[in-house]
Amino acid sequence: MDLPPFVNDFHLETKVILDWEAFIGIAQFSHVWGNCHLLVHTKVKVFSSFIIPYFVYGNEMWPLTQTQGGILETTYNNCLRWILGVGIVDCHNFEHLRDKCQLPSLRWLLAQRRLSWLGYMVRMLKERYPHLVLFSHLHGAKHCRGHLA
Image (cartoon, rainbow, N blue to C red; front, side, top):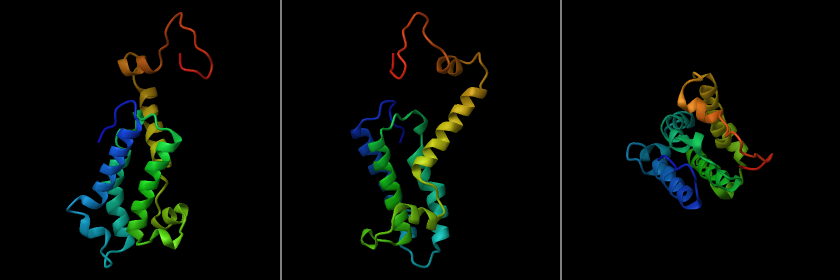
């Protein structure tokens, strides 16, 4: 699901629901997460290939707040908890879960995708419209440092 340029809490809630449904609701994968005969490594590969793209799709344009990023991170970590078969009562911290799955945090994945997109924009030909829009400024407009003008 592609989020609109200005993400509000309703859109974020919808995205979290869709991410969670993608994790547990896709018919092809519903038998994977609870299967005790599959190795954790196999479950993590399936998660990395099919579910993480749901979490990060189009994030280059999301203006996420700390709270919204935390909500997405919590959903991501709950998926990892499900993969490992660890309950909330077991009191494992998120860093331990990510280390066990050998996956980075969702915030790191989002930052990596944003920086990759910015690198693409920097390398783009200077005559192309996206490059012009990103690196342009309005003549005669005042810009206060630290504030949007």
